[in-house]
Length: 451
Image 1 (cartoon, helix red, strand yellow):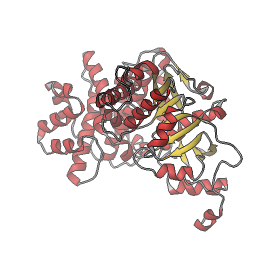
Image 2 (cartoon, rainbow, N blue to C red; image 1 turned 45 degrees about the vertical axis):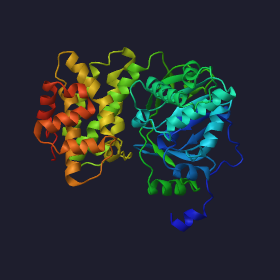
Image 3 (cartoon, rainbow, N blue to C red; image 1 turned 135 degrees about the vertical axis):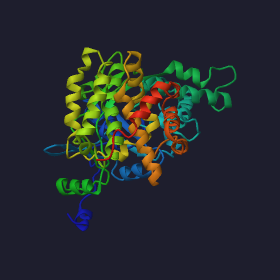
Image 4 (cartoon, rainbow, N blue to C red; image 1 turned 120 degrees about the vertical axis):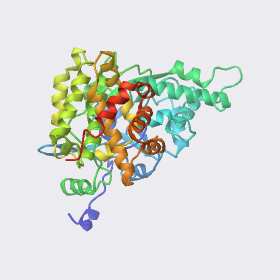
């Protein structure tokens, strides 16, 4: 379809379908949020009662584009044999994250029952006043002052024990507001941090749906197949999984009827996903790029990369013993999902923030293997592949994203085992203090070589 023909098509919008009332506030408007939490909410039988106000993080672009379509977008479910198109209407408002006045207004509203988060692992460690969690804290301070009542905060990020991590980060920031006298608490009254502890439930989750970046070709395909313009479609695999553990004091959508699973203990399911899916992604991202591959499917088709993944899965599986996890079936499903040739999941995208991700994906498996009296070679190989990747990137002047980028570059300047030790210390100071681990990782450097 030509550009002129596309322009002539009507712009996707809400039409005569009214927006649902906002009862969920989301921080981190992006493709994954729209393929996952917004999609599950749209599929809940009570979706008409649960609108989402989605706020962007650092840039307003996604909100501006989506707002022009009244929050409505197309989800393209991309299976091996073809695409399926679905219009999703659960986002009632798409808002620039810089609009803190609207965020605080919604967070204070009694009808708001849930805050969901899709930020990044690094955000939970930030204390700056303009971070998404700092904005959340200021909104909670207003809710406390206006008597908005309890609510639930639901972290949907690939962070181990994400509910507790979110709680600790929010309480830490609330304590800082209290100390600065900026929380609005009168003299002698309990502070914001105490109010958060008593009134905010932090729900832990495991989230799973591969969602690659949308391309211009995807936008053109939606126009050609659907007969309307959508500047903000989302592409995702057919598989979607959401497991949650925690309380919702002000209510929630019937997500379980949309396929979500509620459990008493999230950690085993969280570890299965972090180690098997995300761990394999990280290993493929570093080893695959070292061997010249661009996507997950390409890397998985390489016997050397596939062997490294299987070996890592063998190690991780020894520590995933709950029968409900059905690790064998999960591994088989992952191989099928990773091999989907029509999902272009780029390794360069997955490779970002290695120091943070490896702490949750490789280090726990390596530590568990060592505690069981084994070497943890496959987990150590993942860390070694990351070291080789950042060394090659630094040596060639190629950009890579990491919250500790400057420290990574300084470590890469060292020679031999000292380079290995310095890089390992950025991922796990404890393991870097064990000479046998440093020796093991150093011996594995270069083991995933270019073909």
